[in-house]
Length: 599
Image 1: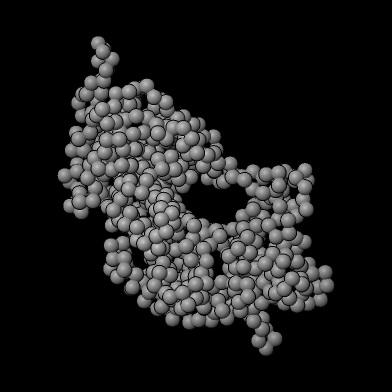
Image 2: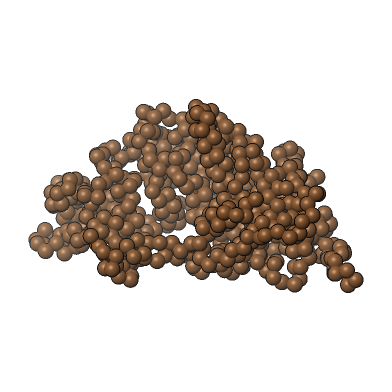
């Protein structure tokens, strides 16, 4: 056992052996990550895995010293001997071609027939066969789980699927493979759309395959790739019928057979539907990212901030909720999970049957959740997000929230009425180059006009229509338009709004129309490396006509750590027991707020 006082700075405790190893990028991003995946996702007992001391393999038949050290070795039993070598894993920072070459060298004179190369970004699975004295290496879609044969890969019954330990790392490896290998596709948005299509195939297959039946979303060892491709495209035709409001009739799976087999092979082991982190959200985060959409000010809100806002507002089961700048649907999805947990608790307390609880969850999603985004692709992703979670996709609209209500499409006007929502949660677009200059829009907003201070009474007076106005400021007013009196707003805003004299009229507008409940300032790193804008979170309640009190407590918090640095890398430190800890203060804010400021 390692004592706390033996932990050295710059070292971590190895996941398998428990010994101290240097905290190199290779260890942190590949060896330790894949060790945990082998144990939790593939089910290999730690007693069957060796990392330290490193297992060694021969360079040549006459090599008695076994000169090649292997990062991870898996054995067929607890007895770690040459004859029991099952799988070897190499985790060097090489490109795919060099990684394969080195893995083949390691496998050539080893008793292991299966090899994995993984560098934290990409991974490759190889199967070794020997014929007529020659050694051959074939790429395979995955490795067998503990207790399975190589022939069992891809022959999964639906009941055997399990949530992924690290779903985001799976998508990351898929993204890097596609970027290097997909034929005829170069744009991230196309990658994302294709992956969303495949996720819907996966979800459909999980929903409509009986527990003891073999899933259709699979690819097996030595299976004809064209046969597998046909099976997936046939599945997609069923998806288009089931989700016709999300997937267009003209949509198709455009990956070539080899690429499709790779993606299916990476995903087939897992249950996307039961995974703790929403698959579309992870895929979108990896495949699109804030930088691609940053030109339109669509910096997608980090999930820890989304959860903090949802937890601080603490929506009830009957709350009607909207995000008028919903992007890919982060606030809607997190809000839905929060409300569903309350539905589940209520059902459990009253002894409702599980099907009745699920019915109630679906009813809540359909009846109470709304989202709007003017970007067609993002609104489509939000629909996909909500559909995969359960439902509520019908409540997402492609519309300009800032446009005159009369100009909205009839379906939007049916689903979204001003002054009817209990909660608005949003992160409206911001950016130096963004501005609304349409007089037809500006004239409808108090904050679309100039405001001058009356020298006699120091009150702001409304003036002429502005030439232009940042959309984030107009969204403040639109959020109040959507709320019913007493409704709650949770919004991400630029901190400069509350500090610069030129925005005093905006602060005055907020104070006159609401009761401020909380102000949480965020570190500058929150949206970096995509923008250096420093933001804050405002929680407030829309005033009711009878409210006159202007003296009330406001919860204030200043967050120092947000979970990543200015380059987007996790802010990690090693604890006294050798484990990684993420420096992130955001998850603690809601609890502090709810202790005394939630009323």
